[in-house]
Amino acid sequence: MRNKYAVKQLSVFLENRKGRLLEVTETLKNAGVNIRALAMAESAEFGILRLVVNNPEKAKNALSTGGFTVKEQDVFAVEVEDRPGSFFQVVKALAHSDINIDYTYAFVGNSNRAVLIFKVPDEMLNRALESLDRSGIGLVEPLFFYD
Amino acid sequence: MWNSIEGAFREELEALQSRRLRQTVERVYHLVPFYREKLDALGIKPRDIRSVKDLSRLPFTLKQDLRDHYPFGLFAVPMEQVIRIHSSSGTTGKPTVVGYTEHDLKVWNEVMARTMSMGNVGPGDVVHNAYGYGLFTGGLGFHYGGEAVGASVVPSSGGFTKRQLLLMKDFGATALCCTPSFALHLSEVAREEGYDLHNDFKLKAGFFGAEPASEGLRQALRDAWNIQYVEAYGLSEIIGPGVAATCPEGRLHVFEDHFIPEIIDPETGEVLSDGEEGELVITTVTKQALPLLRYRTKDITRLYREPCACGRTLVGMDSIKGRSDDMLIVNGVNVFPSQVEHVLTKVEGTTPNYVIVVDKKGVLDKLEVWVEMDESTFADGIGALETLKRRLETEMLNDLYINVRVKLVEPRTLERSMGKAKRIMDRRESESLERS
Image (tube, rainbow over all chains, first blue to last red; front, side, top):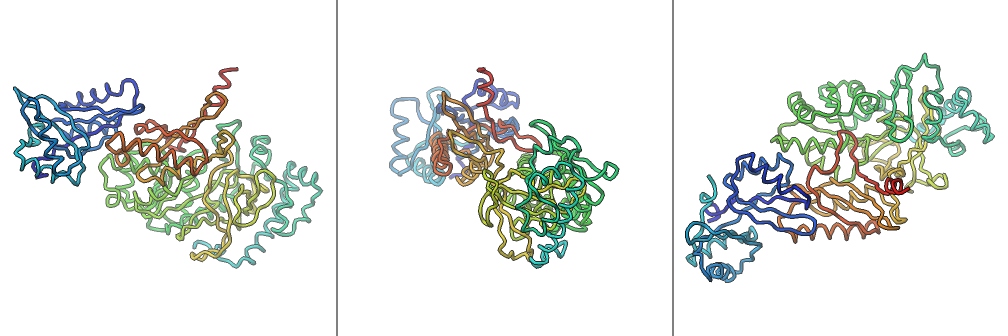
């Protein structure tokens, strides 16, 4: 299942310095990379920008060359109806299978659908996908994000 | 072993040292006014110095003495016999100038040939020499050392990292000579450029010196390039590189038939026993142009004479722990950059790229260590990074007895020159100057 549904996510280490986010986004723009989903985590001194993009390989090369520390990891995405309780259903399915969620972020897709992105510990990824599939939750193939 | 003297019986070696020491004292007394005055002031005549056991009666020579006699005041030969001159960078005050006679260069070639032999380099080997060529002794020292053992020397000098990698690969370099920080830089750039470090290169040994390197950095270089790490210790005042080098057993041996080492208490000047840590002092006993009696290197280390499995009987020396110059005094506690580096490499997943920043906060000193994040250390999670930071801070407190604030920074934000890595930023002095 992992091969079919794992989505490549890029995490970028950023110091809390003026202009750094501008430089990341400019680097991606210059490389012609389209950002499909993003989330930012921050502490007092540094932050982590997490990105799902249309071409992870190209984005990673552009960022590494630009002097950023980038880490590539597998996440997965599910598509749910954009209504109360959808997120709950997904989290419940994962909780029942004893899957820890490292973090999650979401964006509203077309019409009345929403896409949720989940990062779980790597060794739990396959089990998470299986349990969601069993619960009838719609898994999103990476092609949805990539070109 | 390049020369059988490296494995001679101690009695034979000490007899040779004593004979050479007597000649050296005799020469400097008659040829260098500075030494004559010093010896006269102490009431010592050359004939009073009979053997190496009398070494401790001789006066010390300081770097300042070289500066005070800038440029050629301590030379023991007329300029007609000096065929090479080198000089230190002189970042603080006047540069120090050293001269070589034809015989001195032969001695230098000899000790550099021994150094190259430590890494089993000889005819058929390709020596890629990325030490800077010029006034700095590193470039020409390794150059002639490589030639002396019959290897093919590539005098690439510093800089132009990508072209260096290309030449190393295409020429099939089997030995790399450069500073440890530049070797690390080369490995990083090689990976970025898509080289397979173990298969694209044929390196078997690296000859690293001119700056201290922690065991963590050494291991990182051994692993990155799959090489034997030969530390080449030396200083231009004594000869340049070639004062000591690491044997295949991993022990640094001092070429003491030319350079006699002692360890002293840097405060009292008292000679310490084998195994005790203190300042390294060296007396040159074969140099002609610039013989130095008991030169204070400011390097902190230990000596030991237990037999070495490599067969050399030459005295063993620890890697330099730090320079008494580099030692930071932070709120009254002595801190060496090497201690900080040790903690960084001990905590799993941290590369040895860092800078120490000392600042004043009110009346107290404040120590910060900025650590570069790279792909292996960068855990994707604020919590994981905060844990890493706290762990480093705790370890520094345990090892250094001092409160250090660790700051995680992006790569390449720290200044890394092609030569010596700049590890310390001391902002205390400049601030007090600004205030006054």
